[in-house]
Image 1 (tube, one colour):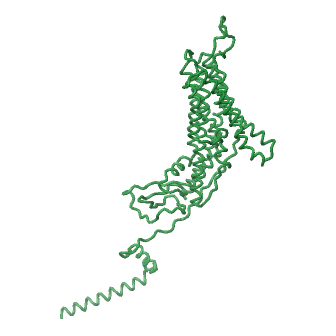
Image 2 (tube, helix red, strand yellow; image 1 turned 120 degrees about the horizontal axis):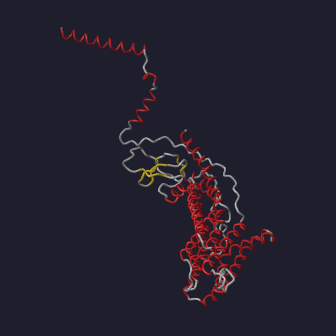
Image 3 (cartoon, helix red, strand yellow; image 1 turned 90 degrees about the vertical axis):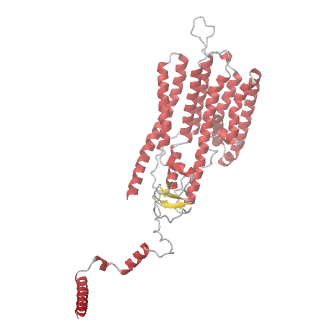
Amino acid sequence: MIMAGGNRKSRNARHQSHSSSQSSSTKSPTLASNVPPSFTETSSQARYAPLGASVPSLPALEQPLAPKHFPFPSIPQDDEIMFEALHWFFIVGCAGFQFLHLYRSVWWLPHSFNKQAVNFYLIDKDLVMFILVILSRRLIYVVGRRIMEMVMPEKVYIKMCPYYRLFLFGVLSVTLFVCGLHIMHRHQIEKILYLCYPICLYLILFGFQIHPAFELVQWISPLSPLHACSTNPKDIRKEAEQLIENFNNRIKVVLFSANVNAYYAGFIPLCFAQSALFYDVFWAAQYVVFIFESSFLSLSDHVLSLRFYDILHRSALHVGTWEKVESGKSMLLVNSSWKEDVLWPRGTLVRHGKDVWRATGDCNSCEPGNVGLSKFYCIFKNPTLIIAVPFIVHMCTVLYQLYLVVNRLYWYKIFSLVFVLFYNYCIAYKITRGYFVCSGIYLVEEEMHKKNNMR
């Protein structure tokens, strides 16, 4: 009886609690009652997948926006003939001052038998002719081509340019050969080999092509490099590789031309100096370095123009780069593999090979692990850093040359330094202008990209 009564009481209690819960649910609805059952089912399925099922996929990636480019201002640049004429005047003048360092006279003394500032009878005339032909080749070619362009129709001019190059190459080669024979009769064979060193270097770098001997940029590509601003990853990578090749060829031309100018204008006169001749070796060697530095920066400013840097910068923003995620530091789910036909936004994690990579650019189309394209992005995402290096080096060189001018006592050293300084002032103006223009533009562009990423 007691057990029966107890069971009856427990059933009544459960009935009352059940009825009270129903009444409370009808009177005060909770948050769970408002959630649709379809959502709870899909969420539970997403959180708890059955054994043997595939890993749930992440939502599709959004297509990254194309990088916005600031319009680059129109900066005046020297005409080809004007640049070649000024550069030729500087190099030939430096060669003359190097001969002055070697063969100066004491004409100001009262009992001096020489009334001229230079002992011209000690200078080899054939050597001077050889140096002039080497240093004047581009100026002669540019002037002749400009005359042909003014006189001939366009179609005839295009057809005649290769023949003009071959003709000029033959004439200059014969002239150099004749001068070399005359030099050979008066000097040892070792010194003749000094004259052939840049020619051997030319064959190693450019082969049997004639264009690089007379042209700085035109032989690299017949048309100016352009940026297509494409959204196709394959086209972006192809454009970047072409621009990298173009940039490397331009650097190669600049280095070779600066080396040839410093070698023939500054070093060859030292090689053919008489053994009994007394001169300041350190000063003459330092002058060779000054010639190379000024020639290299002048050619770089002309060949690697600011417009060309801006084209490389725009292409680099589309290429982007990837950062390798070290194993053990990230336990994030990565179910995306890198695809060559997809543009990846910033922060995306992909698997390529055996590694996991994170996109660090605003728009990423390069292949993870591609060292060439990664360096291309790191260098040209802000070209101001590249322009700052020659800017700092040249300013230090100009200050050092001013210091030497103030502290020199010999007249020939002062004249040679002042000549170099005047040319370096022109280079300093162009480099300084380019540095401040690029720093202002790319700083504003970088801030704009940061604001867009924060949104």
